[in-house]
Image 1: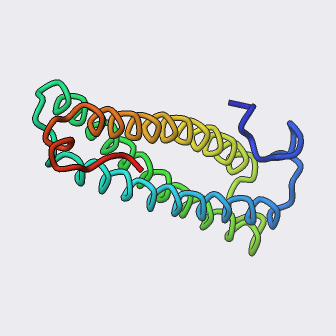
Image 2: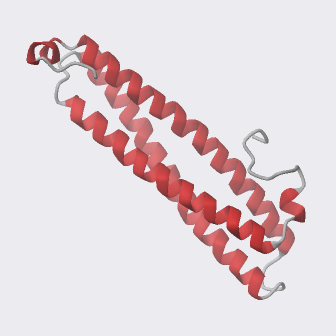
Length: 152
């Protein structure tokens, strides 16, 4: 996943000072808060249109994406906890360079960054699918058409 890395060069993780890595990790934490809010929006969007669904195929599609979103929620929560732990380790390293093994920390940092990149990829795919399913449901459901609800 090197194409998503936030570091300016390949050896950044191994050469960056602790404060720079701390700032980068704080950005990750902020990004994850945004993704968490966006996941809530996607759940709300599905819930809003789910009540208008009458076709079984559409219900099955919505259930599949809902299961996928729940999985993404769990991954988001896990990543947030890992980032918090990572920030704690980093704070220890800033305060006391011998408090935590720096090589282990940098390896964890690299793995966390790779996992974040994978999460973002999955999140984007889910988001795209939610919008596609919502559009399909709105276009295809007779009840929605009869009530005069159309896409903006």
